[in-house]
Amino acid sequence: MKPPYVLELENESLELTPEMDMQEFLVHYMALHDKITLPIHVALYERIGEVARGEVIDLGSGSGKLIEYLEDVDSYLGIERVDLARLYGGFRANKAPFKAEIISGELLNLPPIRPRDTAVSSLVAYITGEVLFDVMVDAVEPGGLVVGASINPGYSISVLEEMVNPAIPGMIARGEFTEQEWQNYLACNYYIESLGMDIHTWTDREVHDILEDRGARVITTSQDVDPAVTWDGNLFYFEAVKEARK
Ligand SMILES: C[S@@+](CC[C@H](N)C(=O)[O-])C[C@H]1O[C@@H](n2cnc3c(N)ncnc32)[C@H](O)[C@@H]1O
Image (cartoon, rainbow, N blue to C red):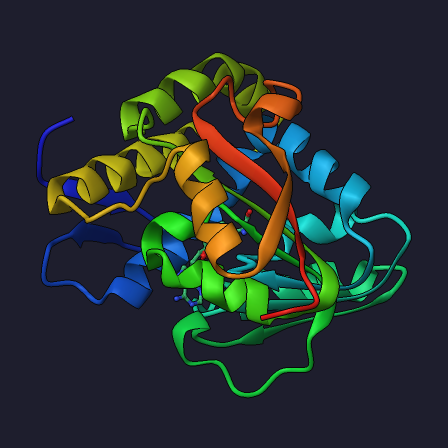
């Protein structure tokens, strides 16, 4: 796909330009991303759902997709900077069988928040950089669980496309989204690539060291989980426990 990258929306055509407001782009992009990449997320969310416990905080929650995979937890708090949380978060949060809410917030500038039992951050670290690990460890009580997943250095947008491609015709046939939405999603991805965004990635080994430096003992990494959780190695994944000292 070559520029111009254009989203065909219900009532307008929106050209994606480097000057456009990122919030406006992200509201469109994340809503599409949410629907279209769900099949490759399921194993990851199921895994997080199995291990998360007590009060859960989801850092960079998007629309709160995780909520429906959580079992036996006491509460859920999602924090998300994009308005998407307001668009879709309320809906998911209202259906949860436990107390759940999503609030707007910037992870790098959070108000004081009571530490929870589990902090999750799925598919976020690449935007924020290493400081996200500080935010995650700070978000739990000593003994609390920190669970994270994000892309590894082997990942690229074309890898993502290859992974979702086989599922697309069936999803369109089932009415999960339209052919136009798929085209819009591709345009978004090519647009992102054209911006040359600085994406942070780490290997499992690096994640291990980063967490240990922050007083969290790693108990599980990518190699210990089903390859479906890590998209066949395109993601790193970890579970760590915050030590009492720090
Ligand atoms: C790829 S999405 C993943 C969303 C969700 N965790 C999931 O697994 O579906 C990454 C999300 O992190 C949010 N995010 C990234 N950096 C953030 C920050 N500094 N503060 C708040 N949200 C952030 C983005 O807006 C986006 O919705």
